[in-house]
Amino acid sequence: MIYRLYRASTYKEAVVKAKMDLGSDVYIIARKEVKEGGFLGMFATVMTEITVAKNEERSNQQAHSAQQGGRGQNTAGIPPAEEPQTGQGNPTTAPAMLSESLGGETSVMCELMEIKRQLRTILNERSEEVPRESQLLEALLDQLRSNDFSEEYIGQIRNRFETEFTLKDIQDPGTVRDHVKKHILENIQIGGPITAGKSSPRIVVLVGPTGVGKTTTIAKLAASFGVLQKKKVELLTIDSYRIAAIEQLGKYAELMQLPFSVINSREEYKNSVMNSKAEILFVDTVGRSQKNNLGLAELRDILDGVKSEMDIHLVLSATTKYRDAMDVITRFNQLMYTNIIITKLDETNTVGPLLSILGSGKKISYFTTGQSVPDDIEIARKEKLYELISFDPVGARSSV
Ligand SMILES: Nc1nc2c(ncn2[C@@H]2O[C@H](COP(=O)(O)OP(=O)(O)O)[C@@H](O)[C@H]2O)c(=O)[nH]1
Ligand SMILES: [Mg+2]
Image 1 (tube, rainbow, N blue to C red):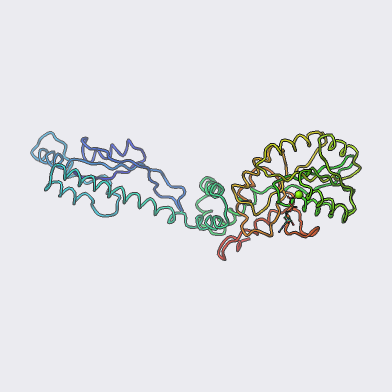
Image 2: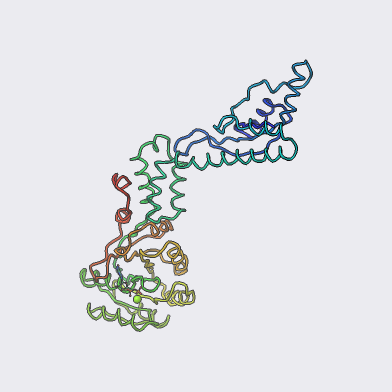
């Protein structure tokens, strides 16, 4: 038995090549797609490669009969259309010789072993391809991986490079870094800061899981608008399940001398909003787990009692793991929030999980960076999030 590899742009063409070379009585024992040419794993042409087997005895007979002027096709003397691609010399010699001397079942075993060996070679070649061909981009993507960016996010960047960029673009380390940075920044959307309402109060509601910093953030915002900017600010809390939490916001209100009420029902909420003389009404909400859908439905019901426009901000801690953050983002969607406040940026070293989920169309409004009221809050900036990604010394930060 002899084996050959043939490569062509289509399966049909590869078969024709094989048949022209070895005759029509060949067996196709493997078929795969391979990439040829390109650069850094991109822009390569996809080819079909087939492994063909042919009974050597028959081809010898054919060659013999051809020499004697018979009608059999002379194939043995014709050089193959393409050399075998294994790069290991002619892999068929040893088993072919063995099969002649052993014959029967043993020869079939030898052939199977040879096929397995060839497949292993092919697979090894494939696994080596990735790092060699896409070294530059992959090294940078690896750095994002160390910052806990999700594989989906990393895959999106790789796809963009494959589809949008020219060979020249990806040959230059600076250009690759700049495009990765551009992708990350484009994925972050920033909402403007809160503005005071004119004829009716601007209602700003903070929602989110327990312990992320809603109440502390409201205190910071209330101090900034009510005390520093001297706007008319009022505070409400729909956190009636946890007495301690009510006391917490109540204490801040007392300190800042701002009006504060506790809401227990849809009616109370409606009345408070209608009677409010504030320019900004900050609403703190129930801090029950995001897993509790009933709690969120109740909250939605209370908030729906008022028809005026509301800015609902989801408060998300930067320390949240990727899957948990995805869960929070999805569950709180029923409250139709439009903004995200990122808290505890001071407590995390990796912003990858956060940046991986920010392509959701929601706008980031504020960052909080510590426990201190009112200082540790700032208006969100894309660049700040990018700067928090840690790149090694030869990584992307050097180009920005
Ligand atoms: N390190 C840090 N801690 C914060 C930040 N914001 C809030 N906290 C703390 O997080 C804890 C929970 O805050 P709280 O406002 O009660 O969360 P809530 O349950 O969402 O209302 C408190 O100990 C806060 O001091 C922040 O930006 N950084
Ligand atoms: Mg609270």
